[in-house]
Amino acid sequence: MSYVNFKEEKFKAENQLKVRRENNAKIIKNLMEHKDSLNIEYDKKYSFRNITDRVINNSKTLKEDEFLEIANETIICARFINCKFYNIKFKECNFYGCIFENCDFSGGGVIFENCTLVKVETEKTPSLNVKENLSCEFINCNMYVKFQGSDISYLIIEDSLIKNTILELTNMRSIIINKCNIDKMEIVDSDLSGGKFLNNYMIDFSFNDNLKTKMDEKTFFDKITLKYNNRDEYEGIYEIYENIADKFKDNNLKNNFGEYYYLCRNVQRKSLKIVPKFFSYINWIATGYGERVLAPFITSLIIIIICAIAYLVVGIDIEDNMVRYGLHTIKNFDIKTFIFDFNEAFTLSVGMFAGVGVVNCIPGAYGYVIANIEMILGFIMIGIAIGTLTRRFVR
Image 1: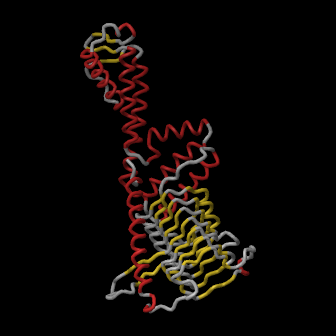
Image 2: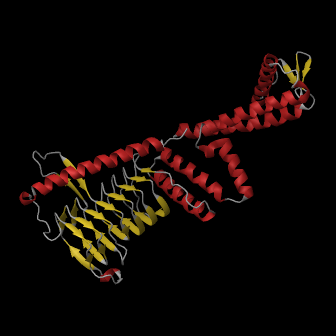
Image 3: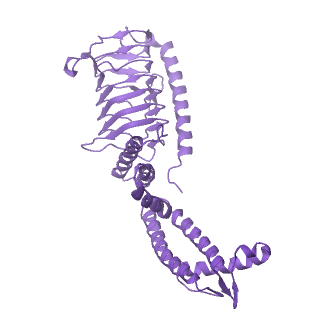
């Protein structure tokens, strides 16, 4: 049984996305209606406008220290459509309720340094203890950006390409990234509490912390759907799961760690060569990589049933009567007799597996070979089951 219910978590996150958009639309409508009475100094060039097909700064790729710097501006409820942002550094700027749709940030990149992309305070009264959390959105964008020391909590990124993007010392609380292709995204010492990654395809996703990126039990990464099913893809995705698992572990969220560790090992198995893959399969079947408590019990039950059938085939002595099933028994097959015989064989198999011996029947001559093998497997599986249970209960 998995600790993270992916179907349920995904449903809740998608509902959260819907509610957030409804909340944003309601707040933006109110701000538009009362824009003349706002107690905020805002940029008149872009705020409360639709900006379409605009190239903001030149398209020549420049070095970071040559970027156009835009500082201390507040832009409210702007909608940028089919715009291109090239070589720009936004410094200590505020973006409240802004939507970037079909925009391109890839021409040299864009930096958001000490910027705020969420409006927490409400303009309504009473305002005590009331938080609006009006967020921004990036929809179908080509993103080559760097968020540094910024607050992008409650941000929505959807249907976008995220490439060579770094988020450093950034508040990413409750961010939602949905249906995106993530080709190299690096998070450094940021707060990812409550963050949701849904329906994304990831090629390169990592943490590069000097301190620690914060995550909590509400942080959720959806499973990555494989596209190409080749070794390079397997290796890339299992490393991503491993990075996520390790970061949960750093935050002492051991159950979350275990779930993504399990996903990591499942994908890693597909990238292995024949011999390591065989042993990985054994580990998966017998222990669920130490993360599936039921795995050793299910495997043990299967071993017991297989051995019970094997005893019937090679022969068992039931109350001084040798019973052996073969092709000759098909003609005279009787279900009641079979149920009785199988029950005796199953009881024998349980006794051999648990190492407690026989009760009403004993194996035939060849059955002792099966019994010896079963006792060895039983000894191993009981140890594995105890170890797996202990691992989970200790958490």
